[in-house]
Length: 409
Image (cartoon, rainbow, N blue to C red; front, side):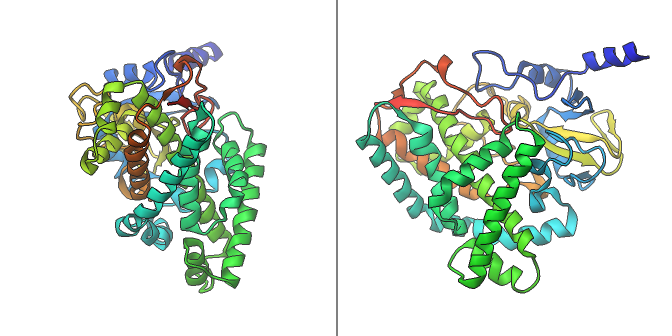
């Protein structure tokens, strides 16, 4: 019996899978193979549990919009990226909730990320981008684009939006790195999450005493003071927005720049234009072509679901890797493995789909438009200062990108 189980485990591919050497922008070969076989496959996580993997675009959107698919991490059988009870997965406020409670809590912060509100911040983001580029140009060469530009842009923006002092950015960036690092232990993640929770709880308390014009003050005055939220819940929301607001966008800025530097004909199109529509198109294509979340979205079935000739049983885990879905030739028929800034890629699933679609997607899009639309025109001779083979990629984290990006001009 033991040998039969061992053989079955050997035949079930592991997830997440390794990328091919020399192909840092592409999904792992395992995912391509599974997608060719069909829209659903079984994969095994590092804890030995097996779950469904949804490899094709159409099936991903159908299931992500299905109310029988749950984000509730407390349900038995949930496909954790790390270990059950890990605060890096379970302490993320409303994104791990379903139904009316998810909708109620999400509505509390929706206005701060509405398109109109985000657009009102564009001039502020432009000033941030211009100042950082100016400082980088005045400094030594080569420069690390991650530290000089990619990380501070979204960090400054989310701090201003939430009302978090930017002077504390090293503290929250260091702790966020621990939370998203795949090799971190449960104890390390729990400690990092605790430090951030304590920090945000203190900020919420300060906002209750002296409110300002920011999102944390709004939560404190309109929700905590009225009893709709506890201070702990407000702090949890603050941690979620602080982490999501800088970690993902920072990695997209750096990884997107590297991809463009490796595709000079595409970079030239951006460098030589001031057309906001082309810049916006390039942002959508880079969001499709790249994939900074390489653990896949995790869900669990609440009921039996028949799809694509398979039955996902109630209580079974379901994983949605957006990287391979965004390379699905059925959804992107014109050479999906190539970068094309003229492609109409807005229908990608980089931000997910359904009721849990990324709350901050309008903010992320605007920041990327300003960053990509300014950097290459301000520094037309921007180029790598190291061989791409020596650049350290984040293969060890739940958020993909580069640890540093040496550039010169």
